[in-house]
Length: 162
Image (cartoon, rainbow, N blue to C red; front, side):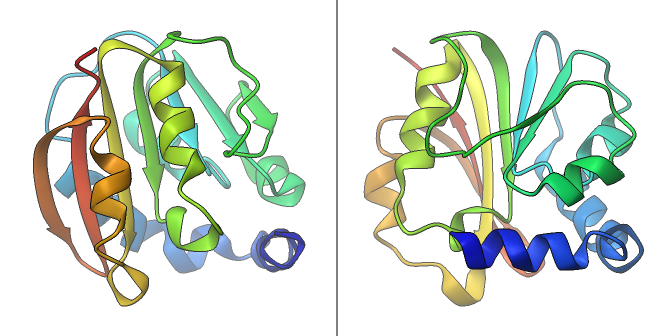
């Protein structure tokens, strides 16, 4: 995990310039529903999703302090997405764009489930080139609403039904 943090710390200064358009295209394809309530952005980086949504009830969590420093949003927390520092059932939406492929396990999925309220929505994308079908079994704790092609990613819109 230290290698991932170092990689993102090194790219923080040019991340927005290089990836803003790519990430915004993913957001447009994956978020086509109204937002209401509290949002958690797992792996928020510099807060591009915050900039895109212009939504105040937003918390961004990331492992890279340098990425967080570049963000213009107020509610940011340095955190490991596999051990989220939040109580159970507090968020209405959890987003994770292009994070899963950097992890050694799928624990982040169960953490997203844990912090989501009942009927909450989890939006997850991961790089197609590293995508493995076994992620489907990890996602079975959720109700699948939709699976979408999302440029370089494959995306899932999921609901916490229980």
